[in-house]
Image 1 (cartoon, helix red, strand yellow):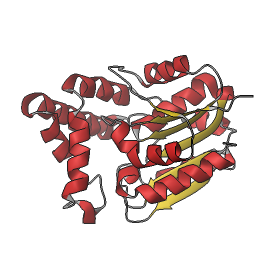
Image 2 (cartoon, helix red, strand yellow):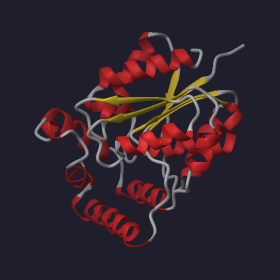
Image 3 (tube, helix red, strand yellow):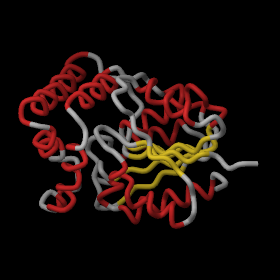
Length: 241
């Protein structure tokens, strides 16, 4: 019997660079895998359907940030096919009602406006403020790598992904139905998708494992790649790889 396909799903404006260290570790262990590319898909469902269309059999899906929400859409659309689920620095709630939701909408659209008028890299340098651990704010190699990664995408892709996130569904019911080995991982200083939110998800997913990565913010796979890689390899082992 063939083993499940392993898919690493990047988040907003990210690509294989997000998973560079983890992907290298999987290659070193001869674990075939795909790093998903969302193209110009403008809904989480379309992103999930594209992944499902490329893999007909069982799946192990690991998603970061927006990619975690895509992984939850995979669980909603094809839950019985999932053999393992890893949700990193992500969330499960829809856009908040009222002023909180409007504030998020305005903030995202302001970044899109900057991307269109000043360039994606300029927008990324603004976006990354507060997204990494405070002591990494002056880490030019890390900040540069994140900004360069974003700059490999266009403002049109950013617009499509913002639309997907603003229309995100409530995934509470999906979490409660997950029955495969599940890893929840979060940077301890992730203020965008905080540890408390991951603890809530842990309560909703029976038997799930929670790993908090010290001295890491929202971009934990790039900030603390060794710790994230170790957690993912342990999860893959639990899932039968």
